[in-house]
Image (cartoon, rainbow, N blue to C red; front, side, top):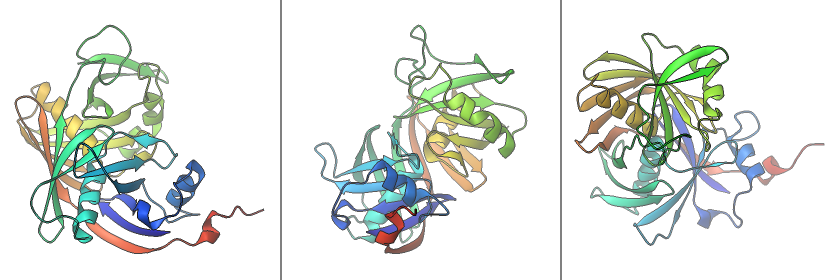
Length: 281
């Protein structure tokens, strides 16, 4: 099975073209490929391109636990770079269909910079989803492990819970992220961002990603958190998001449409051995 590996500011994905494998990927194969000791190792698999009725390409985004994500900002940037590397696209804008909607993408600087129009952020509970009566989920309370947080929820095709705090750490995300991800408020589980506002144009994030765990960077998380910071009046419409893996620029329109710009780096390409998928006794 042929693969390509890229990272977008530390958020790494493996790209597998369905033409390069004779069978669809099973959950166990996905888990093995993504495992950092027993497989190639990654934060997920970008499986595509497929034909699309809505866009030029269609993409499936597979989490390390075998579940499927609706959308991934970093994944979309990486997949855009892969399409560019394969000479399937040029620098002009092109479209990619995901479970979370259609996005527009463009590649520049010899493939190293990718801009994605991610779609519109919504704070409506029914769209995210969040349980309870229909409402905008702004500055609500949640308690996990006897720890109370104030959060906002949003969707940009996939669900996000944004918690604003004066100080954030990786340990905080690792301690509470999985508890919030699986909280009963969120029937489809949720991505969690712990956010510190640095100034009107900069925020800092620590991220727990649904189905993947603690993550060095996330494009959809950056989009949702920046939109929340703007919605709360804490930041302006152009926001640099600082994460352990690096920075992403988010531009927010009046209707909360998001444009995301960030780097992509190619890591490797190769062939997975069939031996990797044989269980040891």
